Image (tube, rainbow, N blue to C red; front, top):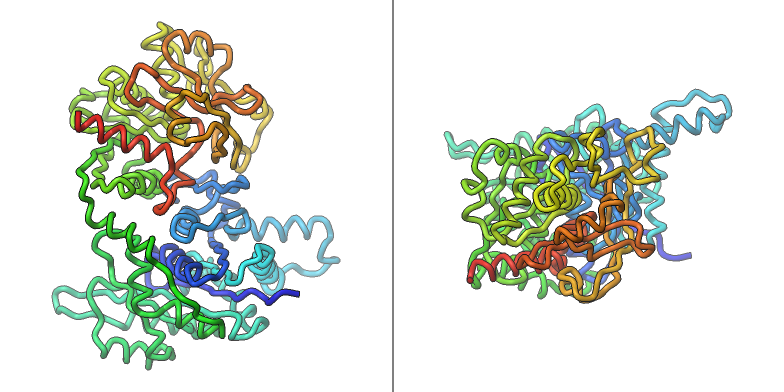
Amino acid sequence: MGVPAKHMFVTGGVVSSLGKGITAASLALLLKQRGYKVFLQKLDPYLNVDPGTMSPYQHGEVYVTDDGAETDLDLGHYERFAGVTCTRQSNYTTGRIYSTVIQRERKGGYLGGTVQVVPHITDEIKKAVLTCADSGADIIITEIGGTAGDIESSPFLEALRQLRVELGPENAVFVHLTLLPYLSASGELKTKPAQRSAGIMRSIGIIPDVLICRTEVSMEEEHFRKLSLFCSVPRAAVIEEKDVKNSIYEVPIELAKQGLDSLILRKFNLPENKLDLSQWNAMVARAINPDSGEVKIAVVGKYMALRDAYKSIFEALSHGAIDQGLELKIECIEAEDLQSRDPEEFLGSVDGILVPGGFGYRGLDGKIEAVRYAREKDVPFLGICLGMQCAVIETARNVAGLNEADSLEFHPETPHPVISLMDEQKSVVNMGGTMRLGAYPCVLEVDSKACAAYGVTDVSERHRHRFELNNEYREILEKAGLRLTGLSPDGTLVEVVERPENRWFTAVQFHPEFKSRPLRPHPLFNAFISASFQGKQK
């Protein structure tokens, strides 16, 4: 038998949205760069089985894994920072845990016993955590969603408390992230909320091994001493996590300066090994000091009120800009605004236009108007998922002369359904987890812009959709100048379309943003940023 995996549990207190995901991802990067294999997972306390049916305004983007799981957006941080590949084992919700237990009870799996939160729900949570050991990781980092004291989080914290007892303190470490608010009126940094937060953890039997303090201003030694004394955490294990000024990718560097990764390894009784952040440091330096110019990209979406709805899109754009030493300016444009006002007002000053995915009819015509503007003005264009379908509809309406062309998703009675329901989706009743999800192969035309970007003809990308380009309209669309340059290996599904007469006009049915990394920008985003900047120079 191999050496058992070490477990790190990341909890949060005082308020939500403190950055547990980025902190966990940063720790994963540091430990990986010290030679350890790391696996990450997120435990979410809401009752939805997964976020697949949740509104982006409620939850932000749904992050899709290679194996087809619809998951929390924090998994995007895990993959981008640490370069790991997450799976459906990387995200468990209360709903998923309870569903498993209830299904087992219905089958008589508990032999007539009374099913309770303790031990049955907590046992299922422990099983979900321990199953990650199958990944072969040396260290498993588990982030617990919500805030200490939340009713919803209680079963998760109780399960992890039990796990620590069962695994032993050298195999299970608790890292608690808390807030030190700064009162500008009095000029004081307050530690009381953090003390309360640690106290809540202590009341349920968990004393954090490490206390990480989010703060806007630098901590003084008195703050470290007070937190150490009243939170029962050694002084060396009280870590400052001050807001970074320029890029979230600075966070691992700042944590490494305080020796957090070394501290964790010592608690695990593991060799510290050498830390190599040379590539990461170089990337951050380029991000902070772009020296090649500026590029302005318009993102025309329908959930612009919440930037997290397009988190991976924004990050993938930034990766392409960082790689080329460019300062990125993103213009967030509500698609509905383009339906009632002159597009020139919004798009006239941008260097590139990106239309992302989405669901529902609202804002559709605005997205189509953005595509039309990009085509007619020859502005570099990247369409993703619904963005590709909008490109198809725009060509059908404004070039092929099919004025009422539409998608069956939005207009079931359209005489020209250029976007139709996939065959395997026609019998689907349930909404959650039933789309075409996960990684699928695609074959690119050798002389296409997409192939030039990738450098290969065979690629694999992640999908999340129900509708597709209607094959009955392929010939009409190609005669209208829309070239179908990427297909499924059997040729039945159109994955990529382009307009060769434009400088750079590419739209894809899949979601390339999910595979972009700061040290390895996605080829399509890199090519799109490059084309946008070159067009600006001309």
